Figure 1 (cartoon, one colour):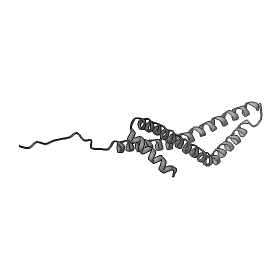
Figure 2: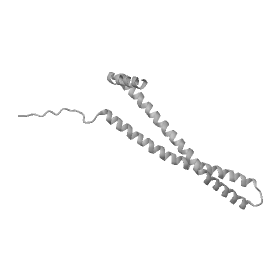
Figure 3: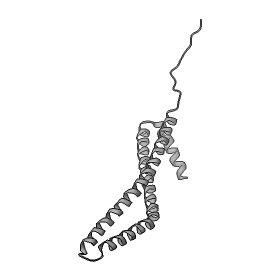
Length: 140
């Protein structure tokens, strides 16, 4: 008669699982940063349009008589032309701000993960020795 032994070994390495989870998190940060960059452009353009509307209203209110309609058309033609000319630089600036914001978020997450790893290493001497070896290699 034969018997089979089935030990309860894990089928995947916990470090690999943590790494895969971390990489999935980075993919989410990148897509969030891209979509927030687009929404920032829309928000900035809306704010500029609102500011132009307020200025136009104040300019029109100060005129009491004369060529109001012609001045109104000229002003809005100039405002829209200015907006069209300024869209490319505004997109570039907003894109750079979005990239720097995304890299800042990634660095904060890395710092948090490093802190968690350090707390874990304080409790596990094997992990602490590996971290010390890695720090010595990076200094050399």
